[in-house]
Image 1: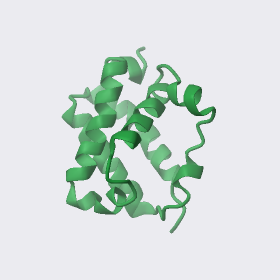
Image 2: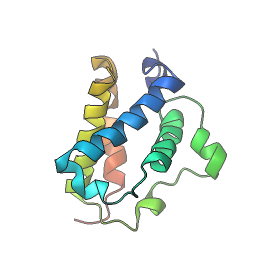
Image 3: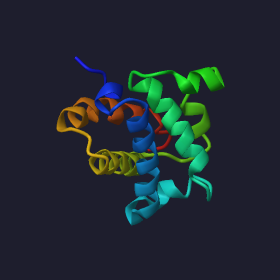
Image 4: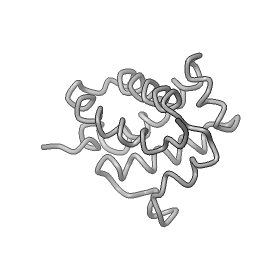
Amino acid sequence: MQTPYELLGGDPGVRALADEFYRVMAQREEAADIRKMHGQDLGPVSEKLYMFLSGWLGGDNLYLKKYGTVCLSSPHARYAIGEAERDQWLACMQQALLNIGASEELQTMLREPLFNLADLMRNKD
Protein backbone atom coordinates (compact mmCIF):
# COMPACT_ATOMS: atom_id res chain seq x y z
CA MET A 1 0.00 0.00 0.00
CA GLN A 2 1.37 3.40 -0.97
CA THR A 3 1.69 6.23 1.52
CA PRO A 4 -0.27 9.45 0.95
CA TYR A 5 3.10 11.06 0.15
CA GLU A 6 3.66 8.57 -2.65
CA LEU A 7 0.08 8.89 -3.92
CA LEU A 8 0.60 12.65 -4.19
CA GLY A 9 3.68 12.09 -6.32
CA GLY A 10 6.27 12.72 -3.62
CA ASP A 11 7.87 16.06 -2.92
CA PRO A 12 6.51 17.94 -5.98
CA GLY A 13 2.96 16.82 -5.17
CA VAL A 14 3.21 17.85 -1.53
CA ARG A 15 4.58 21.25 -2.51
CA ALA A 16 1.76 21.65 -5.05
CA LEU A 17 -0.81 20.81 -2.38
CA ALA A 18 0.57 23.36 0.10
CA ASP A 19 0.76 26.08 -2.55
CA GLU A 20 -2.72 25.30 -3.85
CA PHE A 21 -4.17 25.25 -0.33
CA TYR A 22 -3.09 28.84 0.28
CA ARG A 23 -4.14 29.91 -3.22
CA VAL A 24 -7.62 28.52 -2.54
CA MET A 25 -7.74 30.11 0.91
CA ALA A 26 -6.81 33.51 -0.50
CA GLN A 27 -9.55 33.31 -3.14
CA ARG A 28 -12.46 31.85 -1.16
CA GLU A 29 -14.72 34.44 0.41
CA GLU A 30 -15.94 31.85 2.89
CA ALA A 31 -12.34 31.40 4.13
CA ALA A 32 -11.88 35.08 4.99
CA ASP A 33 -11.73 34.35 8.73
CA ILE A 34 -8.76 32.02 8.45
CA ARG A 35 -7.11 34.15 5.77
CA LYS A 36 -6.98 37.03 8.28
CA MET A 37 -4.88 34.84 10.57
CA HIS A 38 -2.02 34.90 8.05
CA GLY A 39 0.28 37.70 6.97
CA GLN A 40 0.15 39.47 3.63
CA ASP A 41 2.77 37.16 2.15
CA LEU A 42 1.54 33.58 2.18
CA GLY A 43 4.89 32.25 0.96
CA PRO A 44 6.39 31.58 4.41
CA VAL A 45 3.31 29.77 5.75
CA SER A 46 2.98 27.79 2.53
CA GLU A 47 6.58 26.66 2.97
CA LYS A 48 5.89 25.61 6.57
CA LEU A 49 2.78 23.70 5.53
CA TYR A 50 4.75 21.96 2.78
CA MET A 51 7.47 21.00 5.25
CA PHE A 52 4.93 19.72 7.78
CA LEU A 53 2.87 17.81 5.22
CA SER A 54 5.97 16.15 3.83
CA GLY A 55 6.56 14.25 7.06
CA TRP A 56 2.90 13.92 8.03
CA LEU A 57 2.06 12.28 4.72
CA GLY A 58 4.94 9.78 4.91
CA GLY A 59 7.85 11.60 3.30
CA ASP A 60 10.90 13.36 4.69
CA ASN A 61 10.36 15.05 8.08
CA LEU A 62 11.45 18.47 6.81
CA TYR A 63 9.60 20.48 9.47
CA LEU A 64 11.02 18.43 12.33
CA LYS A 65 14.54 18.70 10.91
CA LYS A 66 14.31 22.49 10.66
CA TYR A 67 12.33 23.36 13.79
CA GLY A 68 13.12 20.43 16.10
CA THR A 69 9.47 19.87 17.02
CA VAL A 70 6.15 19.35 15.34
CA CYS A 71 3.91 20.94 17.97
CA LEU A 72 1.10 22.58 16.01
CA SER A 73 -1.03 23.82 18.90
CA SER A 74 1.51 26.38 20.16
CA PRO A 75 1.81 28.41 16.94
CA HIS A 76 -1.97 28.37 16.53
CA ALA A 77 -2.80 29.21 20.16
CA ARG A 78 -2.85 32.98 19.55
CA TYR A 79 -5.76 32.60 17.11
CA ALA A 80 -9.37 31.92 18.05
CA ILE A 81 -10.05 28.66 16.24
CA GLY A 82 -13.44 27.03 16.58
CA GLU A 83 -15.57 24.74 14.47
CA ALA A 84 -16.16 27.43 11.82
CA GLU A 85 -12.43 28.05 11.33
CA ARG A 86 -11.72 24.32 11.34
CA ASP A 87 -14.35 23.79 8.68
CA GLN A 88 -12.99 26.66 6.57
CA TRP A 89 -9.54 25.07 6.70
CA LEU A 90 -10.93 21.66 5.77
CA ALA A 91 -12.94 23.10 2.85
CA CYS A 92 -9.82 24.80 1.49
CA MET A 93 -7.79 21.60 1.85
CA GLN A 94 -10.48 19.53 0.14
CA GLN A 95 -10.64 22.02 -2.73
CA ALA A 96 -6.85 22.07 -3.00
CA LEU A 97 -6.79 18.27 -3.21
CA LEU A 98 -9.39 18.40 -5.98
CA ASN A 99 -7.55 21.16 -7.82
CA ILE A 100 -4.27 19.27 -7.93
CA GLY A 101 -6.02 16.13 -9.16
CA ALA A 102 -5.63 13.99 -6.04
CA SER A 103 -7.19 10.57 -6.54
CA GLU A 104 -10.43 9.61 -4.85
CA GLU A 105 -8.42 6.95 -3.00
CA LEU A 106 -6.13 9.61 -1.54
CA GLN A 107 -8.98 11.97 -0.69
CA THR A 108 -10.79 9.17 1.13
CA MET A 109 -7.59 8.10 2.88
CA LEU A 110 -6.98 11.65 4.14
CA ARG A 111 -10.53 12.67 5.06
CA GLU A 112 -10.52 11.51 8.68
CA PRO A 113 -6.85 12.27 9.47
CA LEU A 114 -7.23 15.82 8.08
CA PHE A 115 -10.37 16.34 10.14
CA ASN A 116 -8.57 15.12 13.26
CA LEU A 117 -5.59 17.35 12.53
CA ALA A 118 -7.77 20.42 11.99
CA ASP A 119 -9.91 19.62 15.02
CA LEU A 120 -6.81 19.52 17.24
CA MET A 121 -6.25 23.22 16.52
CA ARG A 122 -9.63 24.23 18.02
CA ASN A 123 -9.26 26.35 21.12
CA LYS A 124 -12.70 27.94 21.33
CA ASP A 125 -16.26 26.65 21.26
